[in-house]
Length: 617
Figure 1 (cartoon, rainbow, N blue to C red):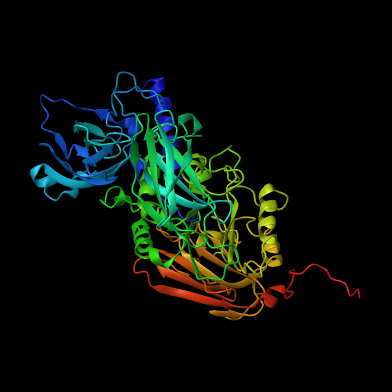
Figure 2 (spheres, rainbow, N blue to C red):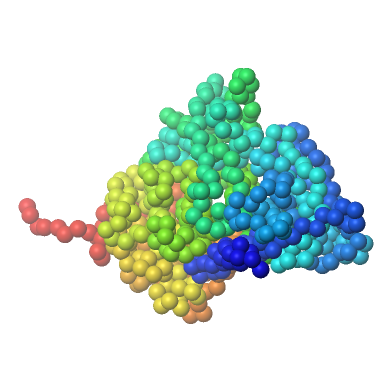
């Protein structure tokens, strides 16, 4: 084995470790990281081998679809249970020079991981007759596709046949719009992905009030390259060109009015490449007294509707959560996905897959995101945790693919005013302790809200900076992320935070109103009058593999559910708030509570909740 071979094996082993290592209380393995790309060899002997792979149709998206199904037929005369079919994009995945890692001497290697794969015997007659047929779903990802048959399993893959390429009619077409509320209540942003650089076509959004004439607003364009990645596999076999990410701002919206929008690119000849039209409802004015409904969850991940990749059982509840939210679109107004989005872990193709999966939601509702460990964490990159959970992404795809109204996009903290709510969104992957820039932001966000008009004050972050009876946290003896709440609990108490939301732990849990680990209210489902503490909610059951609890249930833990689900907040007015937890499997409510109070109850002094006073007359 040559020195280059040894170095390459070490690099790829490190990449696989990076994809699986986690500081999370729950572990999981990115399915693409199971493929030993560095060991792959090519055996395309067309004269002697009977192996074949054929895919139809060859031209995709004839009706401008951005998601299609392809039939893949394959076979050969030596079928094995560990044979597998891979989807590659771009289609030419074996002819280029792999820029990093280097090729083995005199041995053809694959330059990139596939975007998805499935075992050949997923087709029932493959092992008996040596012929199989499966249907795979593709999304428009700015490049062509090819399908490959491998033998030797994932650990020692041998390429025996490759199909002819298939491609979308317009691979560069704009796809998968993502709405987000801007820095003010009267601003909505839309972000999308395309294959058009600004020197090829000019990006814009055409929008207006439903029933009125539209106007065009230009979009800004961002992208990133392999050098933007911090480590493996994102810099190596997990790299895939992200295309171009465009964001346009629709401003001076009328509260609660219905708007239409359509994203497009104007070509040099004056023609326009359009995406599908959508509508959205403008946010309410801060303090507005109207029905307002908000979805909150974390840790959803992505899954494949064709069944590929999922033998790894990596994100088993992802599609259920997505589908329940799609079915219920008319019954909520805005979504907060509080970290751990696709769990791409350095395999960049998965970000496109995720934006496609949630597009039916994000194209119609503001989709607000937070930073999780699987988006941000990588050693020596300025984060708070020195772990490899992002697979070398170090936050770059998340911070580029989605808009959020932060002052500095590299610091993933921001506020959102939505009617009677204020959300203070923290970034648990950066230091939040007293004296840090984030602590200053959190105090400013909490202290500047006018509670007589925006009574419902919510804090969110990805890691559990509050309370969780997860078994891993219990083993640490803290029931929290280390140093999680020590600095922040006095802010939550002083500024009367109603609910603090977290993900990271993949289950559901709700506490009593708490301060300094003590329940300050004996009620469990109906709270009224002065709130003496904050209710803490773990809503990390969005779809990724589930986390276990400690067997001993702490006194402050009111409700726990080891299942997939999401939560919903409904503000009926300035005095009444309903909290609900729903399972993703059926959309039914399994836990709920209400808060009823008046403005004078927010004034009332609670322990450590009032500044010193005097008796001066």
